[in-house]
Image (cartoon, one colour):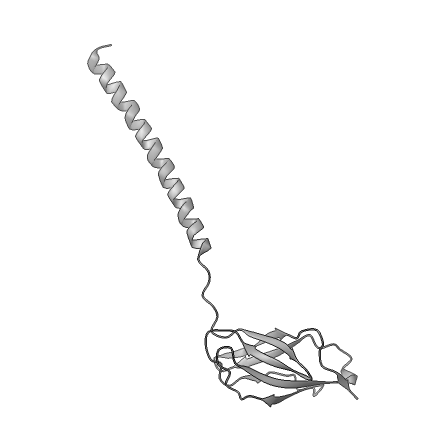
Length: 139
């Protein structure tokens, strides 16, 4: 083997090593990018409802970042459940709330666990869980 062959062989081995290092760097960079995407939190929702106990009734509180207008309870037409707003309006700003009371007819024979809520821009009811201490049944 001549000195030129040794130089060419050394250059070939160095090139192969450079390709291997570059491949590892690309794979590691891709993994880091995926991890970074997963760590970015989702933006908070415009409207995010929570029902809180507020004896003798409840409060529907908006923990979202926007104002909900045209807020209403989308109750079934059976008449077994009655919701009466006690304070507030159909417009609930960020961190604002509506006070309400719920009556469930005894004949309905069920424990109320969630209430369907709609608002302008959200015509499909969103089921909001009711905390422990649900409304009393009436005769």
